[in-house]
Length: 454
Image 1 (tube, rainbow, N blue to C red):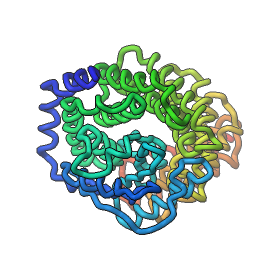
Image 2: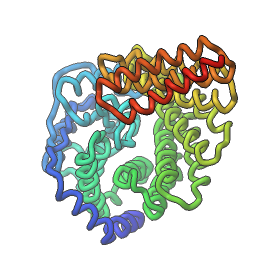
Image 3: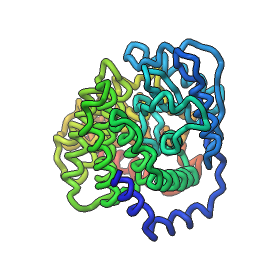
């Protein structure tokens, strides 16, 4: 695996080592909590216990074994049982407080391992890994902790750390520190070469995930080339992939890689935008709206972000329309009933995108749709729950009504704008926010002046 040598050389440059050491010294982290669920193996075996035992020796994680009895028929990854898998896993996470669940499922002579995190499809943090990402290993490798191949242990360990969704800077720094050490161990260990070629696409996919999780928001051109090689090697062996789901996951990660590059690499940025969009759309062919909707919907959400970023750089109005379309696709999946928090986030972004589109196209109908989206977000972000954010939404709605009222000399809309501005002003005054108060006072004065001539 010459690619691992390239990873090691890229990773352990003085620049990266020094930066990581300095950052880590500022933080004291609790261990990430990993929970291994008793594997579904259909034979007398203790794969889950063996994985728990070997992971318990690894730095930075606290590994436990969960063997409460329940049916695991949903682990076949069929679309009709996907919701049962997600719901059961979420219930276990809520009960135990685990950062990552590890599921195991026996398929003949292979053991498939999947990783689940809290609210995985709406709260990814710095994680790139999907519940559908599957690491296949020989079932015999997990017969006992004593004979577990070191390279496979490190792959599982690295995947578990990669799956952790970090919500703060200390956790992100600590996660990068652990991943760097995992990559170093993998680059020094040749035992993976003894595995049959049939495991190649899955190993390469997870090596790519681990490195991408390390590079993440700091992806440099050198990182990009190595990670791209790992995923492309996996795709070159797609004839060994047993299910289109797995191929879809690899294309999704290529989209994520190019997505990161658009934000971090200055050269050839247009090519990175095109690559991200192309690979994300390719992934959606395998992770369809009606078969694996959460993966499809989250890809749509990322596509919306990409199109919006492209519009901001190129001022291509079609890109803004595409951003709205993709958010609408995500909205169909992440509904108010099932995902209220993420739905509210989508509504807020839709409101912003539509308000811009309405302004540029001078469309009152589109602007009214923007208002409806902002009001939708207020179903979750109420005045009592988050008064400042609620006030900012009132302000945004007021801005739209002011623009519509001014352009059409509509007195009712201007009066509507005043009501929303005054609602926001009241909150800002009580929160002692002088800058916002000053801004709203100016908006109210401007609206009153326009109203006088309406």
